[in-house]
Length: 408
Image (cartoon, rainbow, N blue to C red; front, top):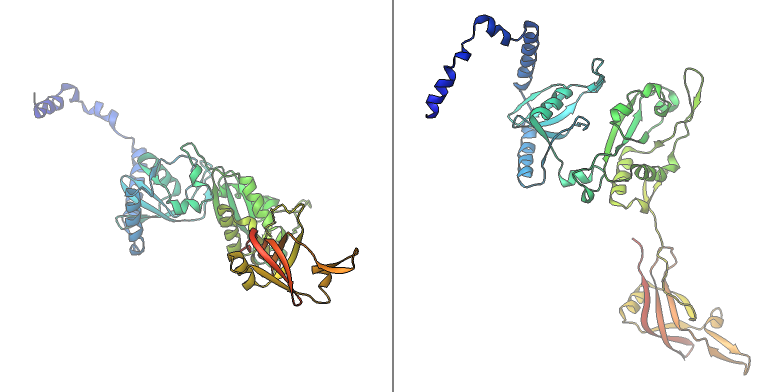
């Protein structure tokens, strides 16, 4: 039997000959149909709205398609616990969608979940303002989230080299500003709270007006960073250590007269906080402190200590000009001269009590320093001979035993 005959036999099956009463069993109730029609109509209108500024998104869609093909991005199934943020791409029903922005989230009384209107841009040049939870459902039912690129991942506060399929976001570092109307708080410039939460930041701050931690006032989320494969509490501690000098001493009283002293609020410009977080990521934050006067990070100088063992050796310490120091390190200068003066004669010579004659002091090595700053180059150089010539002591140099560069 060919396919056409088989289809005809199925369609002519007596079981498909239903009475009108039996057909009613398959009808959708009128009230449910109205809801479905209303939902479809709303979605249809939203999806058919032309995106007037699509030209500025056109390149992004082409780029993401290219990055998917080259392996820089990949598809991932969205879970109910994943936090959706603006700037992320999705595929729904085979179409690429960009979540451009979101309105302020509000708690839905019916299902106790946060929801809001979004601006979603579709690669066919349309846009919609579907609800966030509608977007989530669409992605979970018939789509994928698209992973970040390597560069974006490095800005997301986790170590990309340690990721496995079982990795989970362990928490979020967030930066908040206060919307308090109290003069002492409202008039304080560059006042931010830096904290950590294992839940979505929006959920953590939803009850800010009743929480002394948030100054009993609404807050604005300035930025948040996801933490994966990194000890989040150590991450948070490092930020606080750097900014301890500008931690604000705030006292607030609730409507019951109870006094609180909230911590983790700092008077520091937002861009500086973001830079600190990046330096924690690349491991260089230990080289910086915060300068509250200039309101910027200041690189600290950690002097490299000598590790050469000079025990049992006689070492003469001298300061030397940079030009001569470099020549000694290169092996171009093999004699270091020191003029005998009234102020230095006892340093370079001594009087032997046995015969009351003056002799040159013997040294095994010279420890040379360039200039007088704490952050300076130094070296230990072998002395193979010491001679005297018309009021000048000559130190004949051998190999460089140790060379310490200037810290940058």
